[in-house]
Amino acid sequence: MRNGDLNGTLGALCGDEPQRVADYIIRLEAAAGPHALTIESPMLGENREAVIGRLSALVAALEARASSVRIAADEFCNSLSDIEAFADRRAAHLIQIKMPDLGVVDQSIEAVRACHERGLLALLGGSCNETDWSSRLTVHIVLAMEADLIYNKPGFGVDEGHMVVHNEMARTLALLNASGVATAAMNPAATA
Image (cartoon, rainbow, N blue to C red; front, side, top):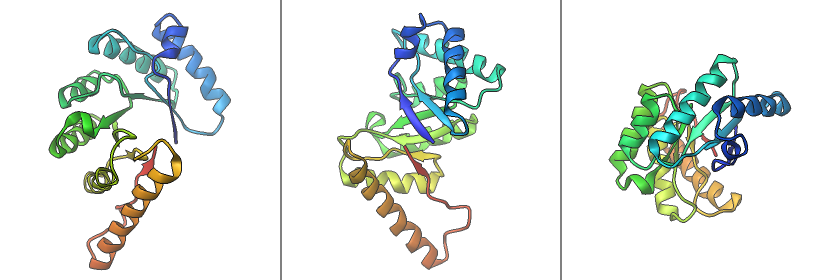
């Protein structure tokens, strides 16, 4: 799955009308063919409630058309209460949980739990400015909470973040397997 962050540009292009945005996304889905498509922040707004309203209407419009495109929420999902508000109103299929914004590890864990309890996917993300230590900590939370995706970090490049995240995940799974703790259900999450 590939994630495309549009930062609200699709909404701006379509007059912030969820039905018009859904029409355009349906065309993108057809062009993508057999590939899964996730679109992050296709619409924005002046505040959290405006974004939730627009994205909820968009998700409903796509689901009414049996679209398999996933909408990811990022902007205005900066606290646990924000994430719960988006999830409660079904304003996305996937929420990016930005660990640095939440501030503490237990809030990130609760955010993953909030997404899963409400039937949403959880992307444990953050910032390209994080350290390798925070990236490695993220891996452990992803494995423990069975988050659906992990952000490729640190750095803007692909190689650096992938190396840090992949190697920590491989080391941890190897240790768990060697100790007999890991199960067949424990699979590495995809990276975004």
